[in-house]
Length: 81
Image 1 (tube, helix red, strand yellow):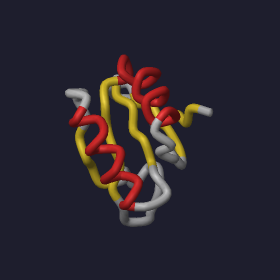
Image 2 (cartoon, helix red, strand yellow; image 1 turned 45 degrees about the vertical axis):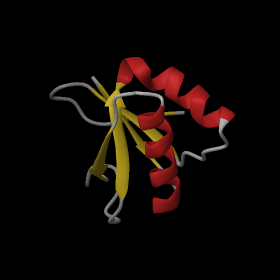
Image 3 (cartoon, rainbow, N blue to C red; image 1 turned 120 degrees about the vertical axis):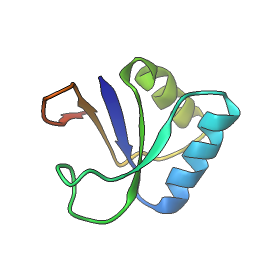
């Protein structure tokens, strides 16, 4: 299962990616999936097992996340509140 994080701007995405890579955490930049938004943009995809640690790290470093989704194989995206 994967977790997809959507950010308010590319600036937030780049800051988040730099922080994750600096901590040695596995994360990929991906285009925002069409099932989530028709807008062009970049999101971060990571294993769902890292979600809580990553969200905590982002809160500590004041990185704003717009939305968070999970997706299991063969299923639709599910928004996490």
